[in-house]
Image 1: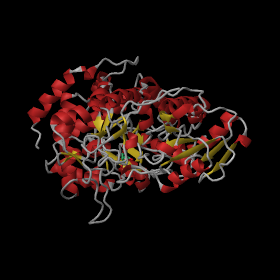
Image 2 (image 1 turned 135 degrees about the vertical axis):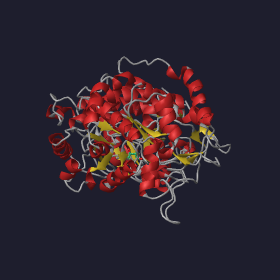
Image 3 (image 1 turned 90 degrees about the vertical axis):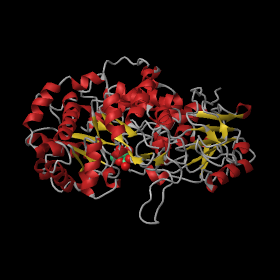
Image 4 (image 1 turned 45 degrees about the horizontal axis):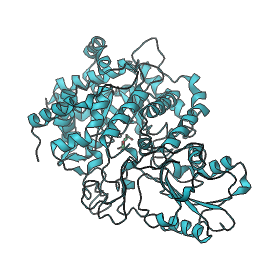
Length: 619
Ligand code: GLC
């Protein structure tokens, strides 16, 4: 169904007129207006730039593809990023990240036209690429807190830890509204509910950008993926190569009427733009068959026109290559649709040469180039990058805040409030501290599983990947005596214990690699529960997962079931709930399906809930 410009925009206005612009409950005074407050200086600088320098500002390269430091100057690159698995050459430790940033920024500010880099990274649940960072619960857990102020606080801490490495831009928050939990990016979403997403997405932007974008502890935020990334139809997802790997949902097609698309998938953009988000990332996915990266109605007429978005659009990673046509036609399409900066990210030389040809052939109007560069420079001025009196290198005074106990205490609170108690027969919870406990499961003593994807590595990884407290360690600390707590991955040897705890769920994944057709628990997880059961003791199941899973098999065997989602580094927050130091308050932000569902897409008639959206028990 084709969206006529007039129909779509008219609808947007009516939707926007409603309570969607509910006045913010936040104290900070940031507003979109501030992004244009330096426009006089922006215009003056724009007038001095050559076409090559303008196109350079529109070009973002992944630092791992930078042929030489000289290319920063030679091609006037405006931005760099570390994409998934694009690590500093010397490793993923703090020092390597900070040295890497300073290495590139020092060169950028030293060469004409002396426009510093806006430098981006996927800090989506803390500064998660860097070993030692405070890693917060992924958004699916934060969604269950329904606590906007806590989300803002977590984002503020994340911004500080990002700035400690010098980097000044986070590709967050993801304001997706996942409708089919078989999607591998479900956990990047706060909720299936646009109301939860719009409120928490705004909170995250305020935390990341702070009261003023030029605060040295602020970073530029990026609302993503615009739009409808979480609404794709099962089976329309990414096909890699002819008949090769097929991912059923990721980067697929969202087929909705204008009204439903707006109602479900645009709310997070309405609130984050109103909150002054400085960048937005269009989605790989399509809406009614049109790729978002090529959709002028969405990118220009809705977002920049009707919503009055003043910042700039950054493409997703090489998203232009998924458009029809050859490389030159792909660039022509996405730039003319309204893309302002292209995350190329590899062949930046070809991108620059082709865009220059398009301008010289009048296939990309100079007015479009000037609009894109104006938007990019607007953000750079607003974030203080153009302040000649300010160093643009990392502030080494922030080192001690990185992964600090204070930061981890806030992450622990986020874990406590994210847990959802789904079952608690006979009040098996809270556990007594003098109980003899046997702990089982692949996720009990595994910080990598606890953190999930987008942690140190793009896909994340099981094992001792970063600094933190595993759930098993947290249980031992809570009980205060190691002797009382025994562990076996498969649940064997539980005889003699008074309670068994099975910490089971998913191993890490990201993006399309997380698409699943089967949401049943792994056989080893069911076996661990069965082994505990065979010991004749009450069983508590703790689920570490990026989405609701089919738990029909273990539900009757468990006296209690707790959804812990992907809690991150602070496993103590899980023990706080298990032992009652914190009474659970979490409420499901996603409906939990019954195993007999014929579909796991919320909107499908075959979806049968086991627990409703909003469900959650307390003590
Ligand atoms: C990825 C993701 C996006 C991320 C970007 C840069 O493919 O889709 O969320 O910000 O590329 O890593």
